[in-house]
Amino acid sequence: MEEFHHALKFKYELCIGCSHCTGVCPTAAIHVQNGKPILDPNRCIDCGRCYLSCPVNAIYIDQDDFKTIYNYKYPVLLVPSFFSAQFQERISNKAILSAFYHLGFKKVYEVERSVNLLKEKYNEMNENEDTDKPIISSFCPAIVRLIQVKYPSLVSNISRIKPPLDLTALFIKKSLTNEGIPSEDIGIFYVTPCAAKIAAIKSPVGEDKSVIDGVINMNYMYNKVLRTIKQGEYKLVEDEDDFHTLSNESILFALTTGEVRLLDRGRNLAIDEVHNVSDFLEKLENEDIDNIDFLELRACDESCAGGILCAGNRFLIAERQRKRVTKNKPIVQTDQMSDYVDYLNENMTVGPVLPRSMDKLDDDISIAMRKMKKSFEINAHLPQVDCRICGYQTCKELANAIVNQNADLNQCVFIQRTLEQSDKLTTTEAIKVTKKVWGDKKIDKNTLKNLNLE
Amino acid sequence: MNFTFSVEGGDFTNAGAASSHVKKMMKQLGVDNGIIKRTVVALYEAEVNIVAHAYNGQIVVDIEEDKIYIKLEDEGPGIPDISQAMQKGYSTASPKVREMGFGAGMGLPNMKANADILNVVSEVNKGTVVEITNFFNAQ
Ligand SMILES: Nc1ncnc2c1ncn2[C@@H]1O[C@H](COP(=O)(O)OP(=O)(O)OP(=O)(O)O)[C@@H](O)[C@H]1O
Ligand code: SF4
Ligand SMILES: [Mg+2]
Image 1 (cartoon, chains in turn brown, cyan):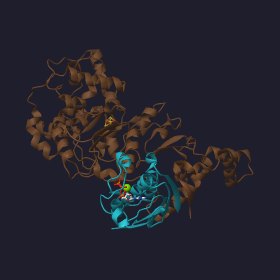
Image 2: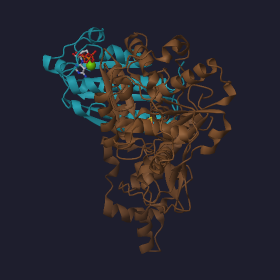
Image 3: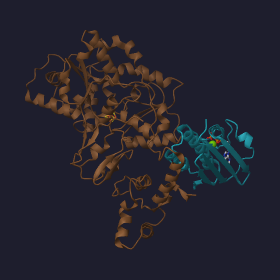
Image 4: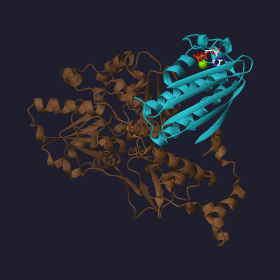
C-alpha cells in the first residue's frame, strides 16, 4: 500500500508529551511514547484537530518554500474566496490584490470561480438513479480519507466530481497557454486553509498528479499580505480586474451548506466538524439511516472558515463571507471560463476512491482472531477510564497495542500503581487488586455481555 | 468466540447495537467490506423485527475464522405462516409501528438476500428463532 503524504509534522524538541493530540484524534492515529508523539501514517487523515489542540505549538504544517514562486516566469495565485474575509472590512480587495502583485504574482484567481460549472453536474449526479445513495461529497479531502480508513464500505458513495480547486487550476493552465504563455513558465500556487488540501495535492486520491505546482499556507500568506499593506510600499491597482467577481453560490460554497444549496431536489444534509461526521457515518454504515440523497461533510467546524490555517475566528470569517453576498452586485460579466466549459466538463471526474481500512488487526484472519480475543481479554481488565496516561487514546487502544507487541500492560497506571504498592505481586495478582477498585463490570459497556472467548 | 446481546421489545432507539458491534469486530478481523455490509444489513433487520414485533429477545453471535453465525431468539407472538412472512411487502405492522418508518414488509426478504444461510422457525404465542450464517470467503 502506497503511503499517504502528511503535511502535519511534529517539532519533537517542543513537545511536552501531554497527549492532548492523542485525545482529539478522530482515528486514534497518535500515541505517546517516551514523552513523544508517534503518528500512524496509515490512520492520519490530516484533519488537523491535533494542531489545534497542541498547547505548545509543537505541530506545524509543512509548506513549500515561498521562494519557489520565483522559479517560474509566470507565477499565478489561486486563493480561496474567504481569504479576504480574514481581514477587517477596512482593508479593501484592491489592496489585497495589489499586495499579491507586489509579492510577485502575475495573476490572481479565486478558487470558487468554477462553482458555477459544478451546479449542473451536482444536480445531474443527484438525480441519476444509478448512483449509490447517499452521494458523499469529495470536497473535503480529510473526509475522503476518513471514509477510506474508517468507513471503507462507503467509498463507493464518494462523488467523483472534482472540487473547484482542481477545475479552476485546469482552467488557468489551459487559458494561459492559449494566450501564448509557455506551459513551463506557468507556476500555479494555491493558498491552503488546511493540511488536508496539501496532502490531497501531494498524493491525490483517484488521480495521478495534481495541476498545482506549489502550496502556501493561508496564515503565512495572511501575514505577508498584511505586512505589505501596513508598510504601504506596494502600488495600488487601478481596478480589481475580475479578481472579486463571484456568484453568490460561489462565495458561499466553502461554508457549511455551500454544496447543499446547489441542489434543487432531494434530501440533502450538511454536517461539519470531523467528530460529528464520524458519528453520522457510523450510523449510516449500520443502515439506520435511509433515503438521503446527498451528504456535504466537512472536517472543520464552520467548514473551511474554520480551516486550521485561517487567521482569525471561524465565526467572524463566516460572517464576513456571508456579508459579501449581501454586498455582491450580480455580475453580468462574460466569464472567460465559459469558453472552457467543454474542456472542463471532459476533465470533471476522477477515478474511484479505494478503501484502506485501518482497523484490521492482522492480514491473516486466524492471527487477527487470536489477537482480537486476547485484546478483549486484556481490555476486560483495564479500568475504561481512558485517561491516556499509558500514551494511548483509550484503554481499548492500549489493549490492541499490547496484542501487537507495541505496549505493555504495566503502562496502565492503575495496574502499575498496584504493582508498586506491593512488590511481591505478579501482574495477574495486581489485576485482581485493581478489580477490587474498579469492579469487573467494565466489559458490559455497550451491552456486550457474556463474552466467551472459547 | 461468542457473545450475547439482549434486545428489548419496543425500544427502537437501541435497535442496531448488536449490528454495530458485530461490524466493528468484523473490521478488526479484516473481513471483506461487502460481507460486512451484508451481515450488518441482515442482523439489523432481524434486530428491528424483535423490537417491532416481539416482547424481548437474545442475540448470540459466534464469530469463527471462516464464518459468522448469529442466532436471534425471542419471546413473542411468533409467525403463523413463515413463507407468507418471507414475501416482499408482507407485513402485519400496526399503524404505530409504521409511523416509526418500519413495516414495509421488506425485512425478511432483505435478510434472505444478505445471508448465505437463513433459517427461521417460529411457534405462535411463544416466539421466533432466526439464524443467520455468512461465510467470510464467499464469491
Ligand atoms: N420476530 C418476530 N416476531 C413476530 N413476528 C415477526 C417477527 N419477525 C417478523 N414477523 C412478522 O413477519 C412480518 C414480515 O416481517 P418483515 O421484517 O419482512 O416486515 P416488517 O417487519 O413488517 O416490515 P419492515 O421490516 O420492512 O420494516 C412482520 O410484519 C411480522 O408480522
Ligand atoms: S473543511 Fe475545508 S478547511 Fe477543513 S479540512 Fe476540509 S477542506 Fe480543509
Ligand atoms: Mg422487519
